[in-house]
Picture 1 (tube, helix red, strand yellow):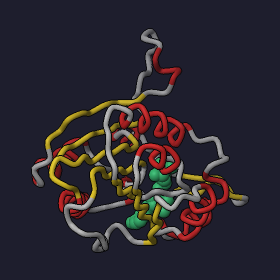
Picture 2 (cartoon, rainbow, N blue to C red):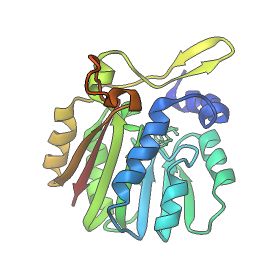
Picture 3 (cartoon, rainbow, N blue to C red):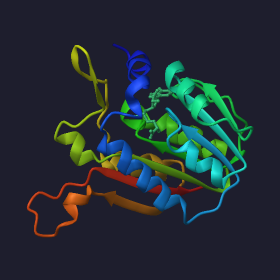
Picture 4 (tube, rainbow, N blue to C red):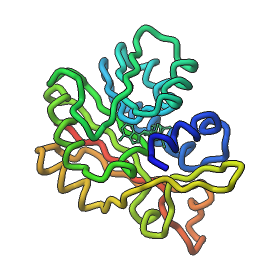
Length: 212
Ligand SMILES: C[S@@+](CC[C@H](N)C(=O)[O-])C[C@H]1O[C@@H](n2cnc3c(N)ncnc32)[C@H](O)[C@@H]1O
């Protein structure tokens, strides 16, 4: 099953299924972006609009890129705002957007489905205004090494999606290649992992804020 078709199937239950990764990403996104101000935003892999809902309160213009028709349809139902434009597009292709046009690019839980990060960082760099920010929040590479991946429940059982492991060094390599400055790197843990005495403390997510 292609990634696009898998998300079309997942769309109806994406917001209601138990999903610690989705919920922690929301917290990480809000806690991180609260510290910054921005007017125009490009959201990569915007899905059902979980984070768009927050961005619409802070920004005056948001462009949402996603290739899943059904995920986009859920987001459109959730957010009826003239500030938001939804665009069906494959992120691996050329992004139809002017260069130097946005203050912030956000990307949550999407890069695990993208094999070639070089193209993403390259386009992100060109689309951002000078001084613009690139926020990324993804499944932590440690979780990927241990076999975690995007998956969802269907009547026939658990469906795994196609994913690509991205090492920490990959994110940094491409950020430096396109001359981004690293402002923040954070690891995000489930609540239960906050207990310092617990033996197994593995971060679920990793986030970065890069500046052009
Ligand atoms: C796990 S969901 C995350 C959605 C949202 N960012 C969130 O945090 O809830 C990943 C999203 O990325 C989209 N996606 C994955 N690969 C893509 C690609 N190559 N082009 C466009 N969208 C893609 C999927 O359709 C899906 O909506």
